[in-house]
View 1 (cartoon, rainbow, N blue to C red):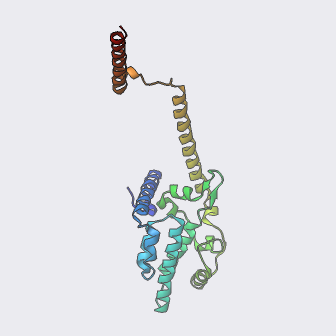
View 2 (view 1 turned 60 degrees about the horizontal axis):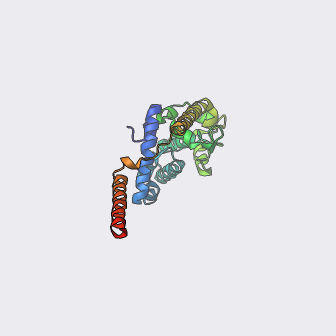
View 3 (view 1 turned 90 degrees about the vertical axis):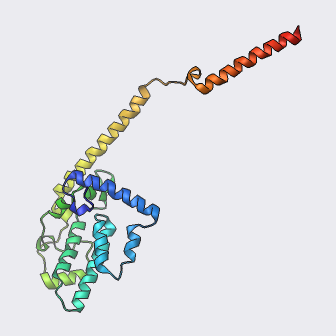
Length: 235
């Protein structure tokens, strides 16, 4: 099984990763070692902070943490007057991928995160886009400083849009797949309920129960003794 979501290749990979991901998070919560707590201790170590954040994609908080770490790396290189093209490209990529999601799916009546989680990471990473076609104005992860850096190095884009708008067909595809899964799950649940309802209720037979049988024997013995005593003393 793939440990990181961004490395998942198939729908099954993404599904298995999600199950394992939340299982591990439940274990972490029980032991008090949740990733969000660990990452706070890495504020002075942007490389490690970035690695931990990316390992927890596609959680919304992990995108934010990865962006913070990327900015720290950029600032460090700017101070040293070193090129930071790769770090800026990573920051922009994070903002672009983050823009694929929406807060709520009206089709599923669920958080949009559920749809993103079901999309294989490599499929989402492989969606074509460019700075010129995607822009920055609609990418919520970017702040004013990020935009300044982008404009300085890459100039002004031709358009401003989100990845969700650009590749809405992929969103609808996986939204539809999840809806079909939910409907199938509900059908199976109702089927099991109907099967239980149509089965005749079977009451326990006390004669077949060892404890019940034992109690019955003692009751009969008690009645016999009472009759004998009544005959003796009554006679």
